[in-house]
Image (cartoon, rainbow, N blue to C red; front, side, top):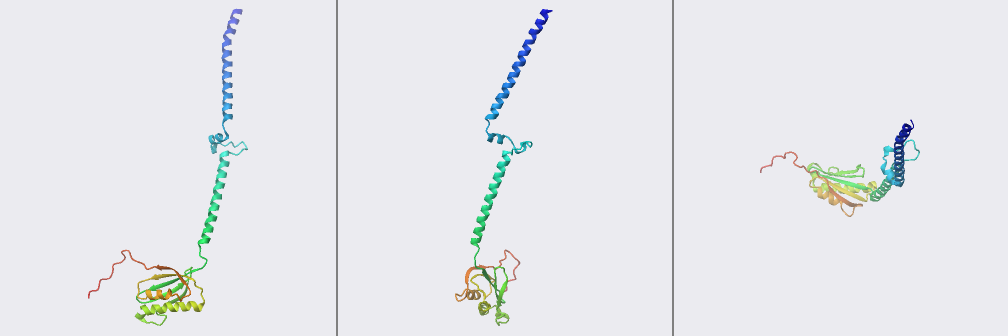
Length: 214
């Protein structure tokens, strides 16, 4: 009986040593992992965790979300400063004086001269028919010249302070050059800043009339 108990005790000893060695190995692994995690920098910790990995139970904010908040705040600050610069540039580029427009519509039947403001409101209107010409004479050279002169006189009578003018010419009638010369005269109270030809030109267009044979 003693020999059997002694043999059973001897057989249990290797199992106990195996259990002790396994527990020592696991404890050493935990210590090494703790040392590794303690050696990781806070930046690597934040990089290893995503925005969805935030611990909702903890009260500390997620570093990724805080970095994103600071980035968006700086981005909006830059946009605000850029808009301020754009506003200053726009205020600088806007002319201080209003730019008026004189439209010259020169057709083969009549020449119409009109003055408009920057909002395209017609202020004064003149034409070859208003200055006394009849029928085919309304589209002539002299009728266009007198219509432009009458426009200048009406501006002076009404006391409209016109300093800068843009001339828009439309059509190829005979009174085209006559009206422009009267408008661009140095005796007028304004300065011609711009000249624009707004005559519409067809690209292909409708079929022209049959050529006349003589």
